[in-house]
Amino acid sequence: MTGVTLRGVRKTFGTVQTIHGVDLHVDPGEFVVFVGPSGCGKSTLLRMIAGLEDISGGEISIGGRVVNDVEPAQRGIAMVFQSYALYPHMTVRENLSFGLRMNGNPKADTERRVAKAASILRIDPLMDRRPKALSGGQRQRVAIGRAIVREPEVFLFDEPLSNLDAELRVQMRVEIARLHNELGATMIYVTHDQTEAMTLASRIVVLRAGRVEQVGAPLDLYNDPDNQFVAGFIGSPRMNFLAAEVLGSEGRMTRFLLVNQNAEITLSLGAAPRPGEAAVVGIRPEHFVPAGVGDCDLQLTLDVAEHLGGTSFLYANTRAGEPVVVEAEASASAQAGSRIAVSIPAARAFAFDSQGARLR
Image 1 (cartoon, rainbow, N blue to C red):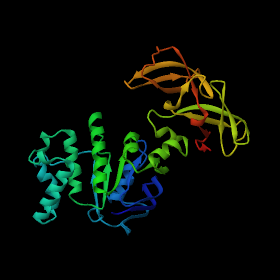
Image 2: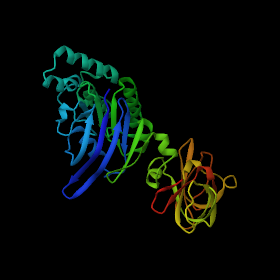
Image 3: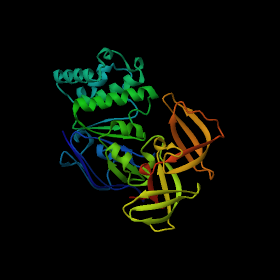
Image 4: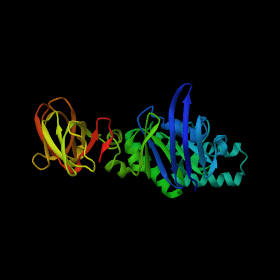
């Protein structure tokens, strides 16, 4: 197994810098996911690791070897793209073996590798079909199989599930997780879908505007975000943010006024912010409790209720129009325009300063 290290990696297009000095180490056998909004630089970073984009500065190492000037085919990587890019006139078997045959790989070894990939991906019955006779999920399995037969040191995935419908995405997430467990290979995966990131990753790299905001295990990012951006990006639906003002501190306890609710909440913080400073209090939809049970009651006006079977999401607003999403039991029933009351447990709330940095 092989690790990947990035040291001060930068990318500039003309006068515009899109990747700003990224430092990252991916351990051998690790499954790391790059996640972030569109345009944050995650695919550009992946393509630089693959050698499909030149780097403007810094150093990329694969297996301890600096590969800045090494051709993509010599880097020991295999890449799976969003588009399947299968040859339509070839069978599955021919698609899987094509790259090896073009490189003059021995026939017996090619057949062994193809058979192994087909077995891992459970596509043995499909080997004599052409792509037009395959479903989207089956085509993506073949695309992944083309990567497997190369027996690479590192697998790179660039939003491989974006073209699949919701049900197939779930199935393929399971397949890719199983593939990683079976191969034990180093994998770097790009997605804008934080659900994919949470379910697949050993560690998540959250990117924004070409910079790394935070790196950590999925539950670490969920439970202990460094800033408001990470807190809002990790978790579905996203964390609720309420405008607040610091009232004062006593020891580790800091009082906040929720300015649009005229309600107070006291949070335990290591460092006391100054009274009068603007702040933001965050609470996840799943962490609300019934009014009177928590530490700060909110009065909301319901806009829409989404009933999903096992649970419901109530989309509401404060009196100042701040959007608030509340997760409730599926039995909960409320009409649009009705008033609902919920409460914030202080132990589940987060605080951020006016610049979005976490107050701890």
